[in-house]
Structure formats: C-alpha cells, structure tokens
Amino acid sequence: MFIEKLRKAITESNGSLCVGLDPHLDLIPSRFGRTITGIQAFLEWIIDETVDHACAYKPNSAFYETLGAPGWQLLEHIIDRAHQAGRPVILDAKRGDIASTAAAYATAAFDVLAADAITLVPYMGEDAIVPFLEQRGFAFLVALPSNPSSRRIVDHGEPALSECVAALASELNARFPDQLGLVVGATRTDSVKTFDTVASDLPWLVPGLGAQGGQAATFFAGVQQDRLMVVNVSRSILFAPEPRQEAESMKREIQEARNG
Image 1 (cartoon, one colour):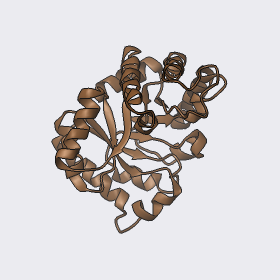
Image 2 (cartoon, helix red, strand yellow):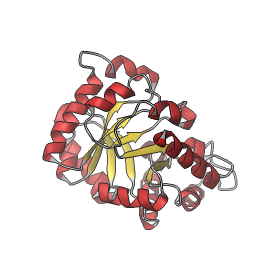
Image 3 (tube, helix red, strand yellow):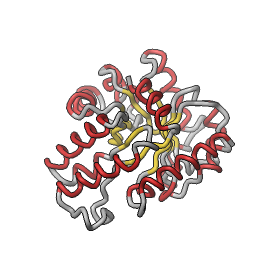
Image 4 (cartoon, helix red, strand yellow):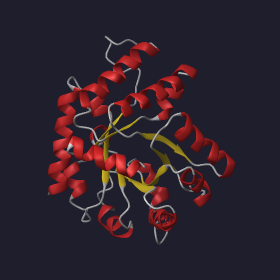
C-alpha cells in the first residue's frame, strides 16, 4: 500500500520532500543531450542525487507523452528506477473521466506503469474516482490547486467547491481507507487554515513551492493538524546547479516550517 511505503520512506529520508521528475527538454543540462537516452540518464542522475532527501517522486506524465511511445517506455523505466531506490511514485496525470474510461486509466497507472498513487480531477464525482480505488490504488484529489486562475472554480459556492471535494474524499475514505488524499497548493495561504479544519485527517500532496512562488513558512503557519504530507518541489531541484544540495536545503526548509 502507498501509505505504508510513504511512511517508511519518510522515516528513511527524514523528511516529507517529494521531487518532481518533469523533464523540460529546454532546461535539461546540455551534457545529457535531448535524446531519450540522455533524458533517461538525467532523470536517473537526479534520483541518485536526491534519494537521501526525497520520500517520494512525482513524474508528470505530460512531459513523457510528448516524447511519443519511447516517452511512455521511459516513464515506466523511471518509475521502476525510483522503486529500486526504495521510494514510492505519484503519477501526476490529473485524470478526470468516468466509468470504463477511468478503469482503463487506472489499469495504465497501476498495472502497466506500476505507479503507487495518481492525481485525479474529481469534478465528475465519485464515478471518476472509485475505479482507481477499486484497483487498490491511491488517489490524490485536486482540491486547492496552486495556480491563481483556479480560484474562480474551486472558491465558488457556499461551501466552496474545494470543501465539497474534501467532503467527498472523506466519504470515500470510509469505504476505501488509506487510499485517498488531497492536493493542496502551497500558494493558497489565504485558505489553508480553514481548509485544514474541513479536510479531516487525509494526507496532502502539496505542490507550489519554489518556481511557483509558494513559501513553506507562510503555508505551514496555517496548518494546525499533524497530518501526513508530501511536499513536492520540481524545477527548483531538477535544474539546480547542485540538485543534492538543493534537495537537502528544501527538505530542511520544509521541516523547519512544519515544526514552526
């Protein structure tokens, strides 16, 4: 189960840092090149450099899909490489379709790619979520995204749509324990305190630190519950001159902010 693997990895890495494995072709150091072989070597190097400080890895499927069929094979390989390093993998695919289509996405994520968890956009209701849970996968539901324009959608209504997502996740968690979490952006410092009280004790995947402008100290100041969290950082680590040092620094920053 994902939660068991995650807790073990958090203990081993002594932190909740998740490293995003998103190979932006124009940012990959020139010494690796832009071929599939070069991209693979770059991503393997990143895993080797950061594994002591990362509790999980999060590849975004879009960057692999742009490479065609070889990109899909690369994604499968990188997930396996992360597992060899003893770390669980969150597939950032943000799927959102229903019924048999959702079941097919779940098969691709958990059976073909062997990911441990996936991100889902839940706005077609539980029909877009349950097929993933029935395959015993873990799902992070997008609740409070980190991008500014999402506010028009997720802040709408009373209660807000984001709170409805949290309520749905809590309901499903009763049927599928330890298989659900929420995506809560580090840039949502205005809402995190309120959301912390309505989101039960579900785990959070927290994107938005680093390149997206989120600040760990400000975000965690609003979080009161001692919940399980995975805090993702992608570009700031991937394309740093020294990824190992940057990962260690980000892990320490997150720890200090959480300990407040």
